[in-house]
Length: 124
Image (cartoon, rainbow, N blue to C red; front, side):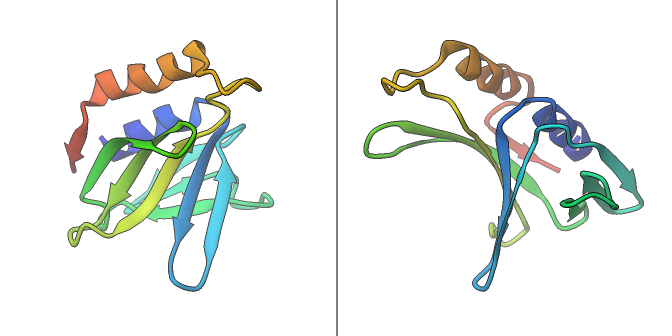
């Protein structure tokens, strides 16, 4: 189910995939990413391209759809966690608001349809 969820996420334009630790942050846009799995490793993007991400499918044990209130808007994301509830990777849905800070209903519908398909919290 992890591969399926990641596949569905990268079908949506303008999703920012983020991995981070105390020393580095990596951000990759979903636009035009490919996905494949070889054994435990799921690769997002072209291995020979300018940016790609390898995700260890054995480490990720859960995912959660999160809507977080920010000062002037709501942030929409799907976050992936390990067995210690440490965030491994997150998919942030960007360009959700127009210039007047109004939520774009088509973008919200994309997020909602994934949320409905997978539910709020998933265990892998």
